[in-house]
Length: 391
Image 1 (cartoon, rainbow, N blue to C red):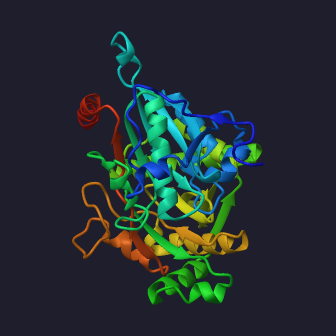
Image 2: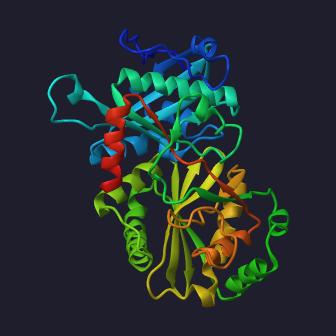
């Protein structure tokens, strides 16, 4: 079904707004006239996800289920399609929150908009990126946003990220994602081809885990009858890991509801490594377009991963499952923190060992562009940014 079918224009003209002039290049005004934004908020989940989550560059964070889960935290989801010359070029699921709820008059209706890992491009080129950024600028104006924050997985200093300045977006003063790096490994069709990418020590550890009797287990999160015990155990592993490593864990009911919803949409799967008759560690994978993404991981306090090398075999089995199900790439996850950003350069980096583990699977490290802000109403936007930094 065409993207414009049974949809309405999301951005009626506002005579108080200045004209769009930022469109990612010298042709600003000409490109602006070719862009149209379609309101897709009421689309059925499957129809939305076909573009936002299952297209080649799709993102689970842009899925219908992810946006709906954020309503429990006070966000309102808005979903839009951006067309250029009548062709869908990008989609974005935006989270909206009112930021000045106590002021009288029009100021009290001002909002903040955030596109987690969005926009998602349907054609991966700078022209599409520029059109997407312009379309979201129009949405922000129509929604009376003080600030719009976008956070696409576009490589730092790459062609797509080069569209930000010309469209009026500036690097956000506050990091959004815990990590801006990724460790990407191509998924090969045969085990021999995949094995050829492994480092020598990684290959030895995979074999060591096999000899130790380690096995991998995949839990179907769409199966309501079989998932609850597994989700509860993974939750306990995740909490234990958060306590050891010092990261924040959200409310249990919220988090489990989100994982269930992603699983029911076939956008997530839960994996465990088993050894000695018990689950040693777990990984929650997101299914993002043609990529698998290691989203969350955990292990109990008494797991003996150094002896069993269970995580080595688990990652190997995930790669083989990905090959059998048509995925082209596996992102083993980030290797930096907000305090120590970027790919580790030496053993002085706090995540050097994690980096070495992931590099052993034949990964390529990438750094994504920082989240970018568009200040529609600069004074209120500056006040909002200060409030965000001190929260």
